[in-house]
Image 1 (cartoon, rainbow, N blue to C red):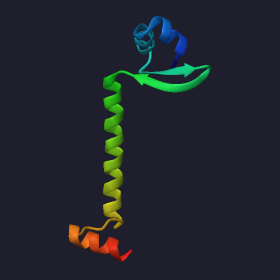
Image 2 (tube, helix red, strand yellow):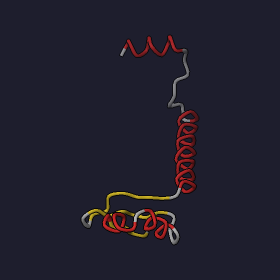
Image 3 (cartoon, one colour):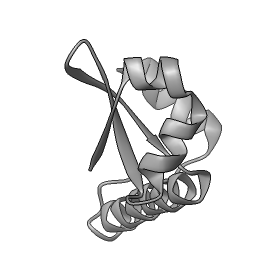
Image 4 (cartoon, one colour):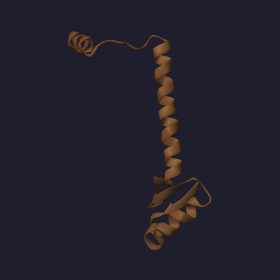
Length: 84
């Protein structure tokens, strides 16, 4: 993964990010020698977000299939919460 220093961002601006992203989908921004941030283009961000949502959906489906979920009305849900 490409690294960009905070100083490079200060002096080169967005050009430093564009150059870093021309060779990799993500770049790490370091501040005082420590990795602090990750930058990426929007298309890559949307791809990662979609993967995250797909994983959450798969986890939910697995919970439903294993019986680890309760299907009930809002009223029954509130009553169950009050009973806790």
